[in-house]
Image 1 (cartoon, rainbow, N blue to C red):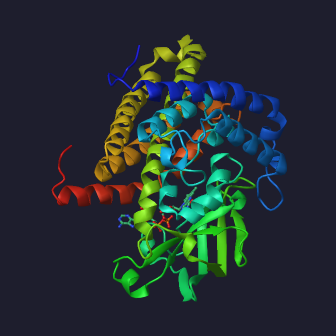
Image 2: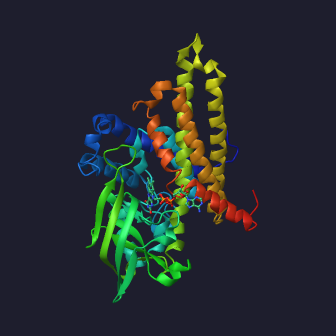
Image 3: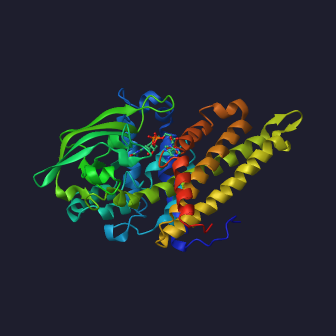
Length: 411
Ligand SMILES: Cc1cc2nc3c(=O)[nH]c(=O)nc-3n(C[C@H](O)[C@H](O)[C@H](O)COP(=O)(O)OP(=O)(O)OC[C@H]3O[C@@H](n4cnc5c(N)ncnc54)[C@H](O)[C@@H]3O)c2cc1C
């Protein structure tokens, strides 16, 4: 019996069911068969913190198998050769994957194209020549990309970026630094944001452009892998660009209007993170219910104590709200509504609800909640990060308040 009265279109439910079946056949068995690899950080990462060759091979296998089965690119617009499913399918499919696979079977992260790493509607913003050069490899899962906006001195206020693109003949030379760029260590292309008109950028009236840069371009280097939460490796990197030459075919969107092009991906990113939070939260609540029903203390299972179950009821309530918000925001986006306020509310609320749900599930498990086997701390790390990444909770609240003050008070 569904807790949600909204009838999802058949193409969305069949996409969800299809990708879940794919996860059963292609993701879970790979984790099962490679337990030794996944349990040993020294096998997962190289000395310099990059993914090991064995892990890269598995990632590639999942990406290409999913692409061959038509799932990987199912939310990419049809005019780019994708399945044409929109934000609702993206939310529903990611929610199902996170819920079913939990944080331990994390190869599922590569089963569906992430907007910043794989093909997405962002590619409608690249030139026909760029599409000609890069689309096939992105669509078949053999190649990937990354999104280079944040810099050491520019995070929430991205207009503060210092990376410059100086005109040189028909093209530009890009110099600067990027930080936190996810997937950069293994990406073939990076969408790099750079100032092309300093006066307009200073006045916050455009002046920042986006360029598609192959990561093997002369002058482009991955300077270091950033390690988070005590891990010995990672997927985020710091980048240096020194006089990297780009040509007109590499412009993404319009010159001086890079942020407008970025919007094509950012909404998918917020839908993805909302789905991640709801999916992990649901996984954690179910785990906690199961544990509470078997663990005994003071003569009965701990599920008999309201001190244990009421926090889980709170989590279920919050996640139900977040689930509905995610479906609603995705439907608004599919209707062509930019849903700036609703998407900000959804992402900010969902990641906090998901994080709280995982934290409460850890508490339900007592000491067992901190062990690697249970996996709750991995979900906790993941959701703690998205309270900052992809727009911090404060910046999302700022956006909501700005919209309200402009008269957008329909809630
Ligand atoms: C794991 C991870 C992956 C990431 N991946 C990418 C990526 O692929 N590409 C990319 O370009 N970036 C990426 N980022 C960077 C991310 O976008 C930034 O971390 C985020 O925008 C916040 O910027 P900041 O960390 O510099 O914090 P800051 O902007 O320095 O903010 C610091 C604190 O001040 C608060 N604050 C700032 N301004 C205000 C205000 N006006 N009102 C109230 N509070 C405010 C913030 O909310 C925050 O709590 C990633 C980050 C992480 C953690």
